[in-house]
Image 1 (spheres, rainbow, N blue to C red):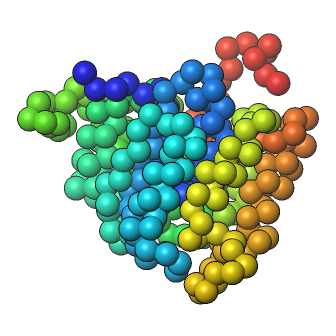
Image 2 (image 1 turned 90 degrees about the vertical axis):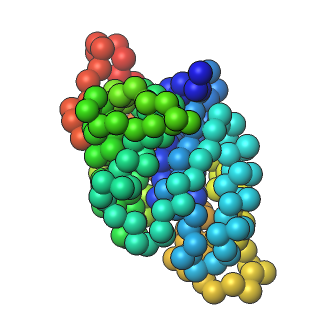
Length: 240
């Protein structure tokens, strides 16, 4: 029987998930939730490092976060499309792990793959629930499965969140997972070309952006998310 996940976090590139919702994942894992990560590409077009380096860095980051599984669909970095072929590959993963919640890329962002990843994953989550779409795993027909919720983490652009998660106490874990991608981020001794994410300011922003969201809700740190439908609460006591 396949592993059933509570949360599946999906990123267009290795490190998207860590940057966008790493602290939230660490918190969910601490609460006993089963969490997995799916990377759509290997990040082979990244300015620094290589796909092979990113593969190992992604494994290291997954270990730091403590996720159950991490898979990579090896879509073409920069050139994957929101079409049937790509949707079906994502549907197979959704049906394999049956997550209740899917976290995916931002609605709109600086990197074109982020908005593409956002849409293709969201569409696949819907299509995965249609019984007339047939997919196979290890020769067996997969059961239809539609996640209960699809949320979009915030990335480069400071989009206005629809809700925020208190991640106080988990930002250090997130930062450690991000730093596992040592080829990508700030290193004063690196001989690699500079990139928008290789500056010290960008690395520092991981903490100060979480601090600012935390300030706005009265906690030390928070991460923001967008949703495609109204956020519902069980009752007023469930609000922070």
